[in-house]
Structure formats: structure tokens, C-alpha cells
Length: 129
Image (tube, rainbow, N blue to C red):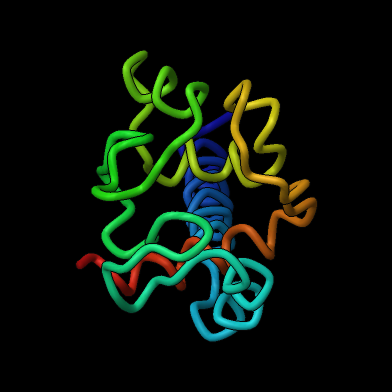
């Protein structure tokens, strides 16, 4: 194996890594459509709660801490245990809420499609508060 082979392998790894990162970024416009499933209980464009807490400014928020919302004991315990919403934790939660946070009162069973989750995350990131 000479240096050209190593450069080719390295370039391939970089190209595939950037492709995967772009695939994980998601499409905010498609995420708005996915959010319609969430909008029954949540709002994102204001700081008001509905049946569920506002998702406005979600990223970086400790779980179970949005003001004036009556969280389940399970969600409060998750936050007290260090759960902070970021892309990774939200992705895990959206796949299966009841597995990620034992005792959550969120009735939604989760999103199974990785693309839907990536798109929803891209949409939610538009509302940093």
C-alpha cells in the first residue's frame, strides 16, 4: 500500500463521514410536517404549555424543568439524574419515550423512522427561544 492508497482511503472516510453528518442534520421543512403529530400536545413557537410542555428552547434544557408544567415523577427524576435535551438524548427519547424515561406520562409511542426524527430535530432547532 503506497501513500496514494492511504490518501484515497482517507478521502473516502471523510466523504462518507460528511455524508452521514448531512443525513443526520435533517430537513426543517419536512420536520414541520412531522411536528404535526406533536402539535396535538406541544407548541414550539411560543413558551406556553399545552397538554405537554412547550418545546421552545428545548435544546440544553434539563428534562422536567419547563416552568409551570406538571411533569411526571419519572421525567423530574430523569432531569435530576442529569438528562439534558440535546440531539442525542432527544433522538433516543423520540424512538421510544417510555424506554428512555421510565414513568413519563407522554402517551406517544415514538417515531420509528430515523429520517423523521432528524427532520423533527432540525425543525425544533429553529426555535431556540
